[in-house]
Length: 87
Image 1 (cartoon, rainbow, N blue to C red):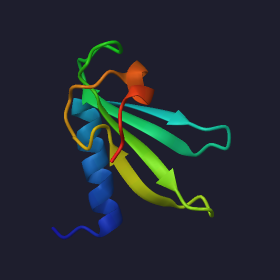
Image 2: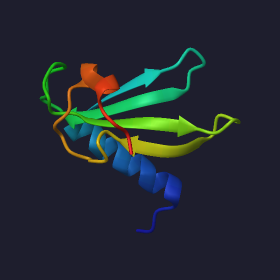
Image 3: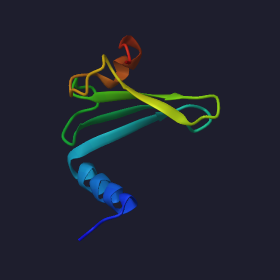
């Protein structure tokens, strides 16, 4: 079976939702600022989260997704997001 890009993304999203917990932080305009991902059994206060920070251009189009300390590792705390460097 051949999937188009939209169908493939939907399949991946459904699979990921079974195994990962996702949390999103929005600004006052509804734009994503931070996204966190962790294994489904992770508690909110554990240091087992991947953190991504979104960067926008002047037209509010996403131009970058930056990882905390430039690492996609399940080792960060959600509530310490401001203490990390995003590269």
